[in-house]
Length: 319
Image (tube, rainbow, N blue to C red; front, side, top):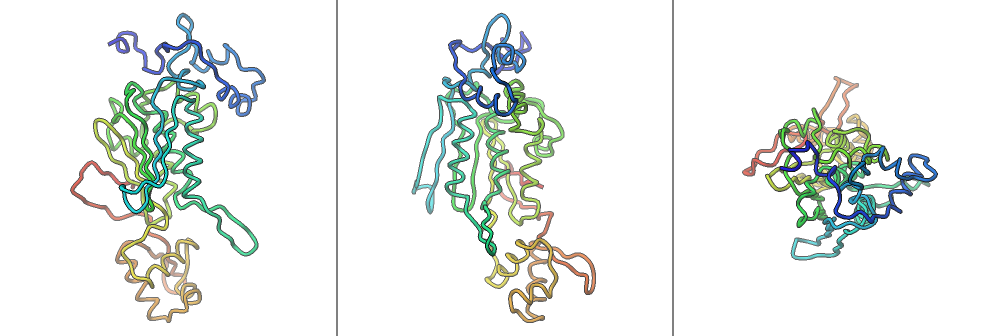
């Protein structure tokens, strides 16, 4: 009622804590915005310090200590009965929370790929997708729910990121997924993350998550309820219901993006008829697609995943 009467968003309300410190945020402001000595004028311009009542809830969320729930990180083993690692990050700046979540992610999903003499980073789940999903959960969650943490569950085949609060009022699931409009619960908080370069523009997070999987067979999924939004990010090398020979062909196409039948034959050692049969089977499964004709025919991963129909209608897969 107070919010509606004053036409204020929750993050713009005055914080009950006014003795706040901002070592983490100030360091970011110096590095990202080249500010020598961030002060009250900087905080006012960012919407974190309001004339008349002081620091806002957005400011408290970005302060070195706050009274809001944070992030619970869990790494499971073979199933949810086996917890390999667990951590809770709260009582600190959301900037710190994001960085700790990223460290936890790197621990289990980052590896190194050696190509010749070069050593490259390889992520089993696109790092950009994880980054955007976590930032979305921090920036757009319902912070009025003080008894609920953001939950990040890590499995062998996927990561599930659950953010308290359903969709903001006035936005549908379709609009959310298509990024056609942005209705932020916490616009002041979002503006700070935008200025610091953590997000490129408001309302682009979902599009970037989907783009990270553009050339992959696995696709992210989104689940909605009145209490929570969950993003599921599958690993890029998740096991598919295909044969060993089909997997060999599929992995080669994934690594090279676009290949000819002869390329596959030379790499795998499969004969012409066997390669043609495998390509036909993978095409029928909507795992790959071909373009061109005759000698110019090329194969690549299927860019428009088949619709997946299940009993849970709240699951919407990225398109």
